[in-house]
Structures are given as C-alpha cells and as structure tokens.
Image 1: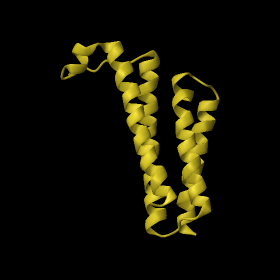
Image 2: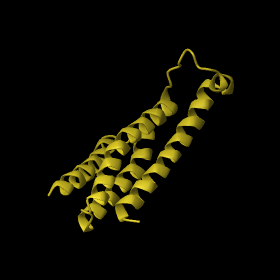
Image 3: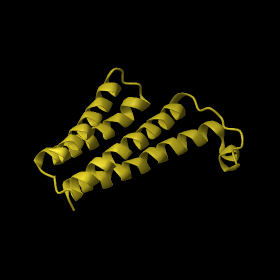
Image 4: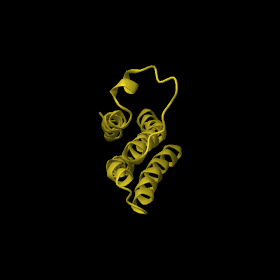
Length: 129
C-alpha cells in the first residue's frame, strides 16, 4: 500500500476515534433514553460534547478533501517523498486537532487545522504538475 493510502486508512480510523469521543460525551449530556430515541427534536450539545461534535464534523469535511488527494495521487501515479510527507503532516495535524479542539487550544487549533489543509492542498497541486 502506498504511504498516501496508509495515511488515508489511518485517518479513517481516526474518524472512528472522533465518533467514539463524540458519542460517549453526547450520551452523557443528553442521557441514554434520548440517545436511544428517534431524536425527532434535536438537542443542541454544549461544552465538551459540543466541541467533540464540531471536531468530528470538521474531520469529516477535511477527510473528504484528503481522500481525493490520496486517491488522485495514487491513481495518477504521482506519489513521491513530497506527497508522502504531506500525508504524514495531514495525519499528525488531525491527531493534534482532537485535543486542540476539545480543550480549546487557541490559536493552536487553527494553526494545526491550517497545517493539515495546506498539506492536502500541496498534494492536490502536486498531482497536476
């Protein structure tokens, strides 16, 4: 497997971690009865659970673009040291983003997010060169 696809697989597993953190914290806040209900009326999450939900959603959004970058890089046979490094930077940034968002590390959260976004953008541009 290419380094880019390995990073993509690990990023997908990180999404599972995000979901578990969100799910556990949300259930603590709203209770198991609501969590098991049809949730016809959504409840806004606050505090840690709200941050966990927003961090998870942000990872979903970033993962879409990163997935495209990894797949195009791999299938266009444009992989190399730069794309592998960018994939590693993206993955490291996403790992750091979880505690940065959950614990409100400002302005680090935004800088960490930008590192992952920039790495993904460089991968995409690299496929066109």
